Every structure is written in C-alpha cells, then in structure tokens.
Length: 95
Image 1 (cartoon, rainbow, N blue to C red):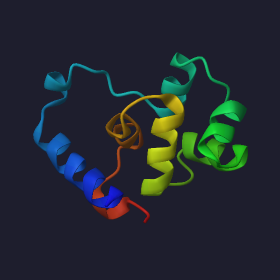
Image 2 (cartoon, rainbow, N blue to C red):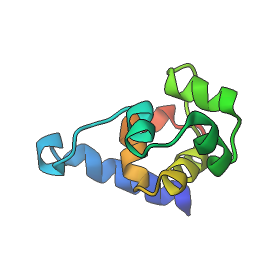
Image 3 (cartoon, one colour):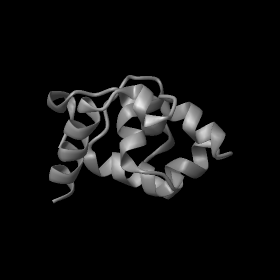
Image 4 (cartoon, rainbow, N blue to C red):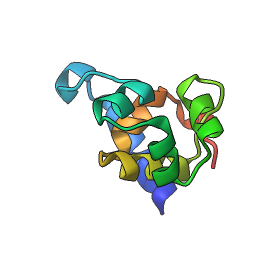
C-alpha cells in the first residue's frame, strides 16, 4: 500500500511545477542539518546504519520506499520531501 501511495505522490509531484510547491528542493543532508539532527541520531531513528545513511547522503545508494518513509518519520516531514531530495524516477526506486 505504501508503494502505491508514494508512486501516486510521485506522479502528482511530476505534474506540479516546483514553483507551485513553494519549497526549495533540499538534499537529505540539508534537511537533516535544518532539523538540527546528527547523522547518528537520524540513522538510529530511521533504523538504518550510519554507513548506509552516509551512502544515501552522498548519492552512492538509492533508498527503498520503506527507507524513504522511515526517514520522513524520523525527520518529521512528508515523504514527498524526502522523495524529492533523492531526485528519483519511478524506475529507480528500490522496493
């Protein structure tokens, strides 16, 4: 069910101009820093390793839908914002 919601959200976001979103597209690192959270704390709250989080932040790995949702919950923001932070296409999402 979560994958369907995120894919639907992705499709909606693709149709909306960024200007209309009224938000700057931020990287995961920028979101984390803005929320005043350490990498260690975010990894702990997201139930992923610090090493994996580092790879995500540095673009060396792509997150699964579950990880996107867990990061959003840990950062207390919408999954859409995390999804945009990774700038992924539907085919790049790991299930």
